[in-house]
Image (cartoon, one colour):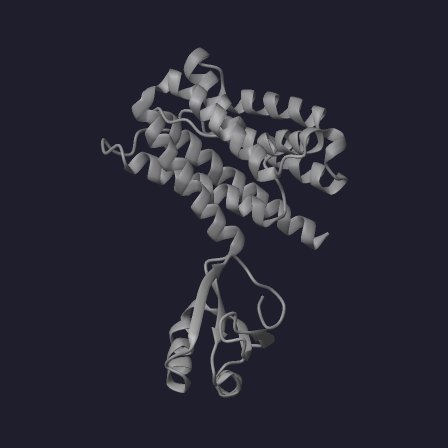
Length: 275
């Protein structure tokens, strides 16, 4: 029950921030959005219909259609998100006023607030309904991935909205959507991006000993063979925090300045010393 209460608090906070982003920055500046909220905003521009009420109606229809596709717990939280976000959008209607005549500030702040709101919601394991349900339907019927379904809906909504808000506002909307996606990534996956490091060295054992001495990280050792030399080698693989990366590079160079080191970002890591 305590966990449920915490989730509902976060969903409430996220829904309110999301509504502020829509009513205080997106709509007053003539911007659209992707997904179901984008359709809601376009209908507001065309007919003046209340975004909060229309958002609730459209999402309620989708929930009814996709009822069997969601697990019971997912359905409860999804319905909660739809009700709260629609209520706050309705409650904050009329609060909006363009922040500035600078056209770049509006999409940046809209993307920031909408991203924070959705990111907080997604951190609870909930969905925002709308395009998520459509993506589930496409996955079941046609075998599409969730990301493909969501991307398709966003593209269709934004492309259709361009005929209503014009090309310039559509381009600014794309900035907002991009900022939103990045903020969600940071909130869901964490601000501290991990680094995966692959090390190939003639002195692999010494490099491994140095890493074990100076880092509290596990290292995996893979046996390998040089494709050209046909010599047996050892490949070291480790995941470290971003701030540890420079120290690791210097440590490897100190042991073997000719070592081959490949580094790439990973979105998240858990277990084995990571939380």
